[in-house]
Image (cartoon, rainbow, N blue to C red; front, side, top):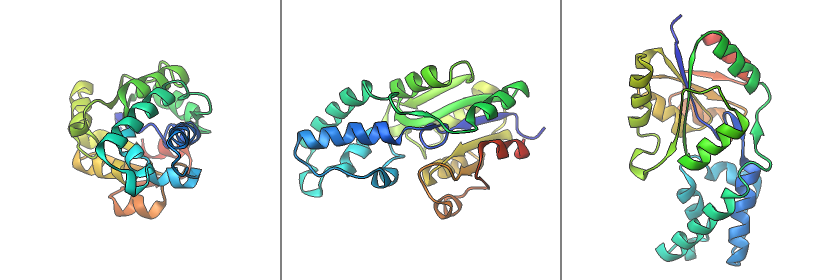
Length: 215
């Protein structure tokens, strides 16, 4: 078996969280009398962490440091109470995780979502599947920086070339390349196939169970 470990992105890969994120951000924007955004718009905003989400959601004329920081704090408070209301695993994810676990594949999560939200969502919606669950703690280690992915490789005791890195954005594919892992782009998430391929995806799948063909 070539691949012995898997690192999953969270949003747009394991769970569909777009509505909770959009609802929370739009509430913050309305509080400041800023224009809100559609679900499709938020799909292009996500992938670089909540601070970046807040920054790009605010009108360009109001992106001063104080406003961004205030809205970021409000977004964290709002999302904390709403992060698992509409969020749920994508169809086929539970079946995939069950199959991978039965094959003794080591499973991990690496997200640019804040670490506390990453852990909370995984614990509530996908408990008992993952060895390591890590979200964003510092901007310096944000994907596509491969530092955390490489640390996971070391903790698993698996060479990077024997690890699948699964994600739905170009950021994820760049991370996989930077870490010398096999990047698998998923088409059920927030971005298009072209972005995934252009960012270095080595495989593309359109349903979770297709991943088994790579194992």
